[in-house]
Amino acid sequence: MNTRRQGADLNEAVRAGATLGLFAAWALHDLEEVAMMPRWTRTRLPELREQIPGVPEAVWARLESLDGRRFAAAVGVMAVVVGAAAADGYRTGGRSAFYQQALTGFGLHGFVHLAQAAATRGYTPGSVTSPLLVIPFTAWARRRLRAAGVLQPTTARDLALGLGTAAAATAASHTVADRLLRAR
Image 1 (spheres, rainbow, N blue to C red):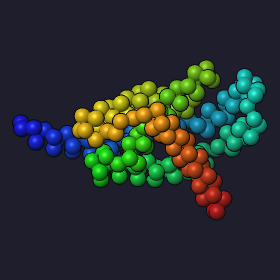
Image 2: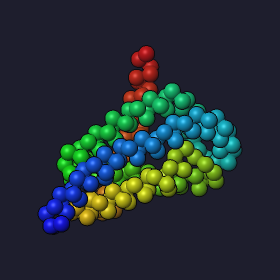
Image 3: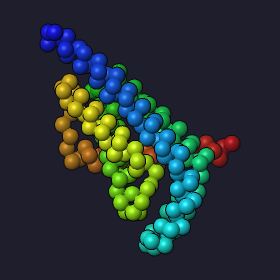
Image 4: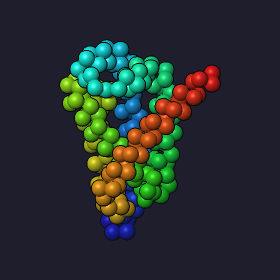
C-alpha cells in the first residue's frame, strides 16, 4: 500500500474512531453515572458528612438535591456539548481545538473520578468506567491524532484549561438543567 493511501486510511480512522468515539465513550461512561448517582447520593452522603466535616454545608445541600431526574437532565445538556465537540472533531479530521480540548478534559476528568474514589475510600459514580474506558479511550485517541500529525502539543496550560473547561461545562450543564426543570 502506498504512503498516500495509508494516510487516507489513518485520517478516516481519526475522523470516525477518535472523534465520534469521544461521544460514544462519554455516553457509556455517563450511563454509569446516571445509573448510580441517585443511590450513591442516598447511601454515601450521610457517611461522608461525618468523615469530612470541613466541607461547606452548601456543597452537601447541592449534592443532596441531585435526584435522578435532575442529574439525568444535566447529563442531557452535557450530551449537547460533547456531541458538538465530537462532531467538530470529525468535521476537521481531529484538528479542531474545541474537540482536542474536550478530549483532554474528558481524559483528565477520568483521573478526577479515581481521585474521588480514593478520597472517599470507596466507589463513586464514574469510577468504574474511568480506568476501563475514559482514560484508555483518551490515550488511544491521542495516539491516533498524534500519528495523523494533527494533535497539538499539550502544555501544562492546556491540561489546566482542559480540566477547567470540563468543570465549567459540568457546572453550566447543571445550571441549565435546573432552569429547564424549573420552567416545567
